[in-house]
Length: 230
Image 1: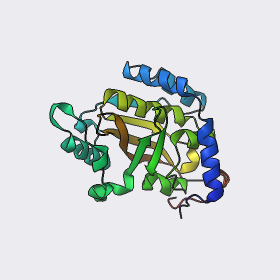
Image 2: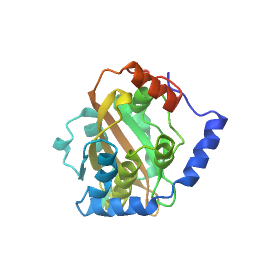
Image 3: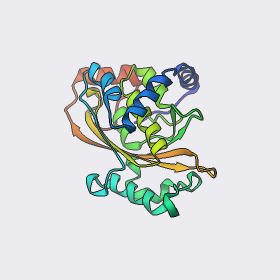
Image 4: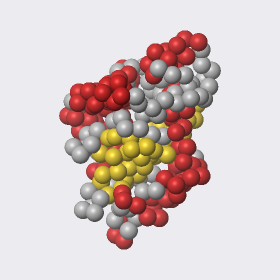
């Protein structure tokens, strides 16, 4: 069963969010990604023992090849306006994506542009993580776990906002999750001024391993609950 914040968790969340201070590193990684260089994103992942991710800006639909990613891409594309105008953030309705809602999350910029808060966490990820991180920022979650994926996800969404295009990603995940590789698609939405403020993200697990008792213990230590999916 997934868990949500209690008051103590909320205090920790805000304290961690206040400590997220690596905006320069995120900026460098995002600029490099837009220029076609994933080195600054890959470096912390490789140092932590993960493989190099694959990232594509504005992927063609036939490159997505997984139903939740294709569904989200079509949903977004159908709502773009004339001249490539982005869909309005005010019109986001996850109920319209009910067929693939387990794989969809909603993020908002923190107002500065280098961190992003989950307005609605991805249920499929929560099933493996054992926790619903709605209300937490990517940076705060990464700090809590000393997680190398924070730069990846934050730079990906900065680049998504700057290019105003969907971005697809494939990356490895910690083994204790059980789902060891994920595909992700992020798509941007704008406010009434045209500024990108919101994103929908589809996450799909694509590789798995049988979890050990040690994995379960690490999960319990990190998250405070056991995953539903195993």
